[in-house]
Image (cartoon, rainbow, N blue to C red; front, top):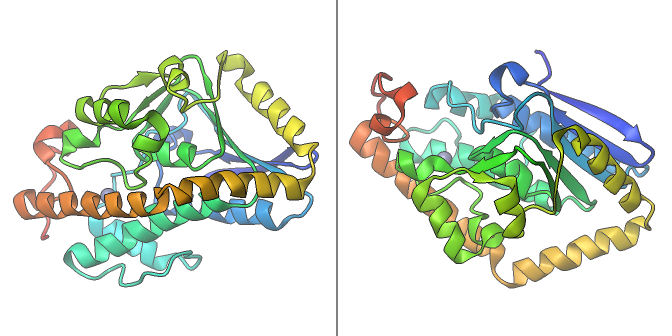
Length: 284
Ligand code: ZN
């Protein structure tokens, strides 16, 4: 099986995980998720590594979750993975049971693990960062975007309340999060920076170097202090209820999936998804 990512060490104490599925616009399937998870583990347990960059090849960071698979194929792929991280099972159970379990494993609990990796993480985003791709960016500690980068979560258009990792209010503020969701609009890197979601906006040609220079600057600091600084900020968010809020929103996300299954026999409203308009109905 061809790897969908690369693992690099571009400087001392710095690891770089690169999404390398350019022909599919780095769309995210279970294989990529578990390869990224393995790469995070490799960087985490290598005591020489102090900072981890998450980047992507090609014009776009990622088009989001790969919806080419049928729901059944997707659940089977999650079931087949031998490197699961979460505490759920029953990935191939019928109806809501299996899909809830599979998404909880592949989207929610992997994301939570990456968010809590005890080393600073920096995401470098160019081009489009759509829906599920936001999870990859948001779980990182720092986001650097190129000027032409855009961010969107259009899933309300498809009858879903937001992506599985509901970072929106934390990343954008409550009022702008609502606008982001309600309109499905694509927002510029500059707007994301203004709202505090993005740390820096740089020229596209400078993205890799700027990100690496920041990683090197961070890597010069004592690793234990870096870990504890990260933990202190994350615990602040946890104390504010972030983890519970994200769990609650995940349940609502699945209420939407169930509604769409019941009405359309598919995971979303196919009338609003041109590429899925002719997908045959699947048993819910
Ligand atoms: Zn979902």
